[in-house]
Image: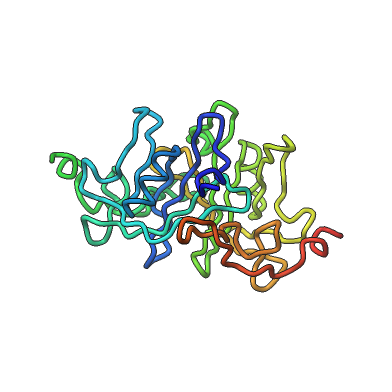
Length: 130
Length: 130
């Protein structure tokens, strides 16, 4: 059986994906893949997601240059969530978030309000110029 | 504005949640919360999810004793994913998975097949006896 057949794709043919930075353990982002995206991710060793807003494959870094090198692909006990081990390329430290921050999870709940905890490492205007 | 109003709840009133172990950085599991679950999680400092299969609140550990102490609650740039920092209670090392393993992400893609990489720390039959 094809390893892709083991995935419990949702009603839209998608699976949620968590990208975790391999050297730091930081959770960088969360996105979705369809079957083709997951297959391409495994073949290329670079993360290819499926953009739900644009309804097309999204090779992470295609506009920003911030590609994700994939070291490992895991699934959970129900085979309905994927966990990627990645190196975030293109900037040091890595920028995974479209806001120019290291991780997308830069807002933490503090005293009943969301507080931004991570600095912008690069102005998004200069990231997406290319 | 209530901090819960900032969440971009999906069409079913849910938000995906990643639980990450605070001391190891391991991603333990992935689940869902509704508004009440997230509010209770913040109030109690213990993870309360919403079970989609059972369509009810699910206080993680209510059957297994494997509660999750919550140290931090983060949201991503789009405010549509939650990241919890947790200590997995009830066993050492922590057991987050209903299969008796540390993490739900115990299957890794290797040579085109899913391979189990983590041992069962406790027989689920003895976990769910209580």
